[in-house]
Amino acid sequence: MLTSEKIIILDFGSQYTQLIARKVRECGVYAEIYPFSINPEKLKELQPKGIILSGGPSSVYADDAPIPSFDVFGIGVPVLGICYGLQLLAYTKGGAVDRAARREFGRAELLIDSHDDLFKDLPSATNVWMSHGDALTEPPKGFTVIGHSDNSPICAVRSADRKIFGVQFHPEVHHTPLGNKILGNFVRTICKCREVWNAESFIESTIKIIREKVANDGVLLALSGGVDSTVAAVLLHKAIGEKLHCVHIDSGVMRTDESKTVVDLFNQSFNISVELVDGTDLFLERLKDIEDPEQKRKIIGKTFIDLFEESAKKYKDIKWLAQGTLYPDVIESLSVKGPSATIKSHHNVGGLPDKMNLKIIEPFRELFKDEVREVGRQLGVPDWFVKRHPFPGPGLAIRILGEVSKQRLEILRKADDIYLEEIRNARLYDEIWQAFTVLLPVSSVGVMGDERTYENVCALRAVTSTDGMTADWYTFPPEVLAKISNRIINEVRGINRVVYDITSKPPGTIEWE
Image 1 (tube, rainbow, N blue to C red):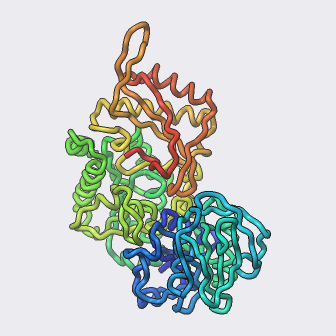
Image 2 (image 1 turned 90 degrees about the vertical axis):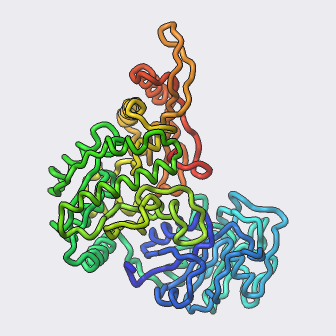
Image 3 (image 1 turned 90 degrees about the horizontal axis):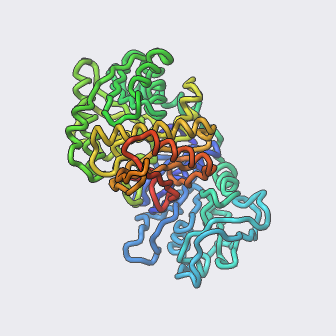
């Protein structure tokens, strides 16, 4: 564990669970997620200063409802139940929960009945975000109502003497403007946590952990050249110096000149040597005739590991493989923290083979993207690099829907180059979380020079986000989109139609595959 000042979040399956952790960390307090099924001995061993119960899609009175096997409210530390967590509190403590007369999804006005502790320094009325079909009809004995809404007479409760609280709304989401204040009141005022979680403290504690774990062994870093693996390389080099061996594999599904840029950057700017391995032919051979996105990811993951293990044989001391895996990668790949649904495999998580000759070290496994960026800044990584858009490990292979071929890769590279160039020319790059092109497995009829064409459709994707867990599509000035479309159609042979994706996450994912 990275710090003794921590909040434990128990996951009951909410799509927002990861946001709770992020928002608590923004308060300067470390938070980590565990499944609701955690055993009491393990929970006590973690020595949390407080516990937050996430929301979830279940009804507490359902036969298969996620309910801890012990009294989580009797651990002896403050507890905050959010949505399902509030209903669990009522259900297990003698209150009453039932189907709401009117389901409540979206914005609502919270009217505060008590401004003590949890709602300290909040106005009498504030907007909150609701997402529930069940509601409390009677609070548990010993609990008082401290907030209500038009549709939820019991919207927030507390047992002041036991420091147990519950809210029907979601303070962790962007649509609850004062949610950070509420969570801050809980972790700082009620749980009395000190604000010791920041990039500097993470770097200091992680370097210590890495040195203890690695000892005298060598570490092979899978350097993709993205923000995550780059910051990981600088951090690991700071921790273990020359025992770090960086290997960059050109998978053949990279952007134009990406591999050369990565190697030059590390050799010249960071004084860290990088071995370049050209795996183009092997990757494309294994991807031949493969159209299913999950198969692509797993094939790419296995091929990366095969090549990294081959590279490791050159170094006698290699015992570890380091990766820049982030928290959202883990959550979207595996339900390791709770009952949240698996969305897709990530090449560096779900794509790993069951048996490996190297042990895995992932210093950012519990961090979000914005936290990694701040760690990078503290380590001296140039700001222009820290701000780079995320790029998936499987590269352009998952941006070509259908079979991957050299010809289709070349078409997509050219379109992507134009797209990013025009975004930078319009000085919009830093406003966007991620922008990229997708080559669709359909052709459309067009007219060029009075002749009929039947060529590929290219989709443009650009989203705004803070952590990649949720995202909204970016609103381009029409003239910028027009210029991008015109250039792609005129300059990229093989594309005769450009469309723009206006899907948010959820319901879509950021990448198409």
